[in-house]
Length: 564
Image (cartoon, rainbow, N blue to C red; front, top):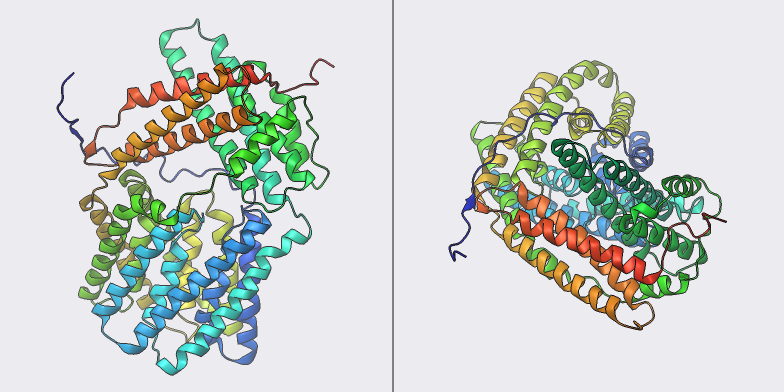
């Protein structure tokens, strides 16, 4: 073998096809949409009644925290939302104090860029999920350019804290009606994804004798379905592991996720209809379907063993995100400075546009940039149509903002650009809480800042390379190999310890999910060594074969009562 280092992956062709394709909405799109309307509406209407709508920017800082953590179980949601509110307050405090100490736009842009980079790194490391760092960047950047004195800071922070506490209550309120709703939804997604893979496995196996081209296409589709199923199962376990005490409903959900996991390992022995039936039963408020088996005790011992493994320290999770943080800091700073050089009065819009672009790799960043520009330009036109209505009075202004809040959350899960169509006029209207402004000036500033933020932000992503992406693949491959060898040793053992094989099987499944996610992220990155595609495919195939062997060794079956 040659000892020469692999050549770097060159710049790839940037995609346009499919970037604006409209997908299916999230199955819980209405939850964040309604939550944000209630969380924003009550403080804004209160300020409207008091004649102090000029303070709405500070209550919005706390109210928008209601957008987060809707997929988390309520015990974990309580902690996550509390941290989101505290993080928002910390960012706003830094922004307001900075604004009160200096009026230098150069300094304000630099602080805004650093805050955006820190928010990006922390949101990715904690995997807080949508809407990610964009809301933090929007609020903190706008706060930097709000006229401020040190004496006003405590009162403005108190408003944000009060609205944040209200947002926490709004986010937790559905738990009173459906306390296990998030876990049930995550388990239903895992069961449905496993059913899709099982059906596709049978179909592609039956067509194995067809032409090589047809067989290869079917095989690729099957691999995508298996990866999607494994990711859904992994997400379900993460949801269940995030809960507090293990009540009987949660144990029943764990058994169902085990069935989905087994279906992925042994799809030929799976009844997809039964999996879908269980998933449908979980959508309502009825009891969790009971799936007992002779091996249930060992399965749950395996869950206990995996629960005992702690998460990686935050510092370890932040390390690989350094290139993304550097991209964000550089891109946001340059976008703000270019906006200043062009004479735009609101450079924070350019900062937020740049901050919203950065995804796991350059290809995804490009796609997000296209979506952002298209959505913002259409949104500006929508603002032009709505502005006369909003300018009828403060009440009309507040109601229009609430409508756009709802529309943004209702549409953004279909495609980011659709959500941006509503976010753009909402952001423009928020600037008018302190007084109506000329629509033409607002629209011009928004268009210029959008184009500047997108172009400069993407250029920063190209300049700041992510050479660590290749290292992460190597680490993920090593983790999969160690997990596979450990599982294989337990399979060969005459009497594995209680729950040991189940825990090892689940650990291998988790490692395979991480390998696929890491490989997909690296595949869209530029200027790094080539992705070891053959090694990854071999690791995935042998890993899934080991999972199937483990299932047979444990004597697990998806449908114990199938022949009853």
